View (cartoon, one colour):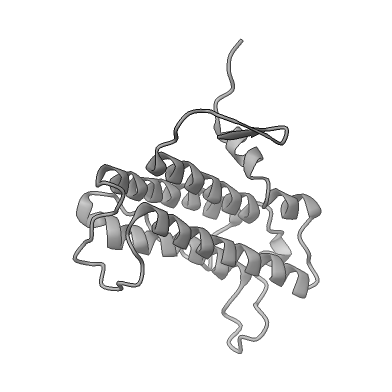
Length: 190
């Protein structure tokens, strides 16, 4: 179902696994959108409340990619899904991290596709010992969506707390899912 000017219109049945892949791509696009808009002065700003000063806005953003990498390795490597490289926090720029996030997003897409090919669930692997995440595609998508949203929210909150609020365009863009979807779709030629 698609909404057109507030009115639902039928577009035909959507395969759940395909919907999960498309939803994940949008989640990644939103995360990349935010990372690309983190100002230089905020990027390496320390997170208040950490005595060591080692936790920064950059480390939170890097955690998103490196966390994906860990899950891709844990759930997918045994099933032939290539694990992207982790990134080094201290030297990475927002532009480099955006590219890395797009690579790890592709690994996540492969996990969802693996689940789709396996009746809607990612097959268990010998590496997966933390059994608190059901491996059906819906729960995996929900888990990663919540994780990404939590850390995007941390970054937005820290920007405000540190007196470096993100531009309005960046904040509003975090909720522009339709815009992110349209940007991914090829434009019809005519």
